[in-house]
Length: 109
Length: 138
Image (cartoon, rainbow over all chains, first blue to last red):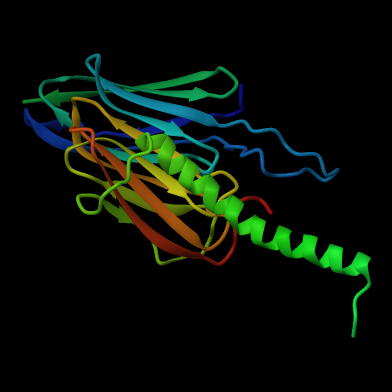
């Protein structure tokens, strides 16, 4: 597991039913591209977050496939429609098999 | 000035290698586009790619893509060691078929966004981004 991988998500706390909201996500991760060499000249192997998903109450909002060209500490911003109150589930999948999760509730009037 | 046979052959090999190299890079990006579109030619219009004209730091270049009505959008970097950058697949609760992220660019190059629309057609947009410091650790 990569060290100190911390997800951070910004979701509005409330919204009106049917609103479109903006969600910003950030996860601290070195995103080792596999292009760098260490001081001995050996290639540092690739180790990145390769997939991100966002669901709301079990339904898919979006999915992103990430390649080594995504910057360190991947930042992803997107929009979601909120039909009712519920919970956003965010999941990041690491090359090494680790899975990082975060969730945020939203109250919809 | 006349060249020996050995020198002539070496010069010819060098010239052949010099023409082959840029052709390899062009093939990689065309392959990447064809892989996403299953060989179809993308059209223009209906997709917006927003990226800076000049990126101060190739390690973190903000890009935004938007294509109303798209099922998915892929971003490619024509001059990176591998062209694939990201693919966004939009679900039923996506508020807009749009997303932003930050990418690495190895040097000045074209960034290409291709959207697969819900009817199966493809549209693309591209923009050259000038990069002052390359973002591949080199």
